Amino acid sequence: MKDYNQYINELKGFKVPVDYNQQYQKIDQKVSISRFFTIPKLSLAIASAALALFLGFFVYSNSLYQPTSKNGELLVYVFDTESEESSPVIDYIFEGGEENEK
Amino acid sequence: MSNLIFSEVYTAHKGRVWSLSSRYVKLQSDKEDLLQEVFLNVHKALPRFRGEASLETWIYRITVNTAINYLKKQKRHQKITQVLGGLRIMDTVEVAESVDSTILKPLEKLNPQQRTIILLSDVEEKALDEIAEILQVPVGTVKSNLHRAREIVKKEVIKNEGL
Image 1 (cartoon, chains in turn brown, green):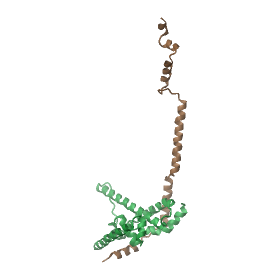
Image 2 (spheres, chains in turn orange, purple):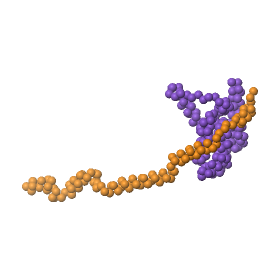
Image 3 (cartoon, each protein chain N blue to C red):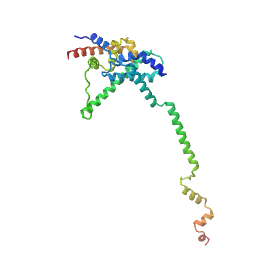
Image 4 (tube, rainbow over the protein chains, first blue to last red):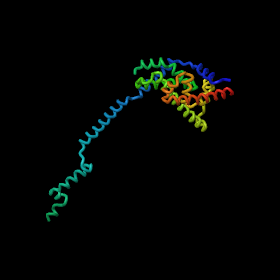
């Protein structure tokens, strides 16, 4: 009957052949693939920061060239500011100057 | 670390890694796949190697961890294949019984840690404290697991011989 030591000796003697050079080539291929897909964390952080800065600057510089009112609408800006000023000339035109004179 | 140093590490330790890793899985393609995965992990971790343990112990640690993860992955895959096979979505592939599967059969009853301890202690002839360092567990844990693993294998050897 086969005992434990006999089994372990069989296991020790059991050697599977392998082509180490071929295995090394496969490892090398996998290393180059993983290198290609692995972006260094520092580069990724710098690229993200640069992109955020660029977008921030773009949004900011755009806002400089567009006139905006308090409500954000151009026509409201024009009419509201005119009426707020309540100039007598404007009042005359819009509220019917002739009637007032009478 | 440069490729040159990795190639030196590969040359120096390939035999040891193959000897251990090839006893975890049955199929030749899986054995080769596992060897490649071990050295890929070695390549990734080499720049962080600080020399706290010897290079040999460190490589054994990577081998063992990679092999245990590989076994877990295989088990998950087998379960999925069984479920899909049961639903007739996928054909289950019967693996032909080879010398490998016969000789490794008694080890299949062990959990991954017990299998590792048997292989390192009785096949690779490592000292218990070295195994404890590789597995990062107390020596007492190695001793108790080794005892339990030997009992299981003894029973399995007798059982398989009767077949």
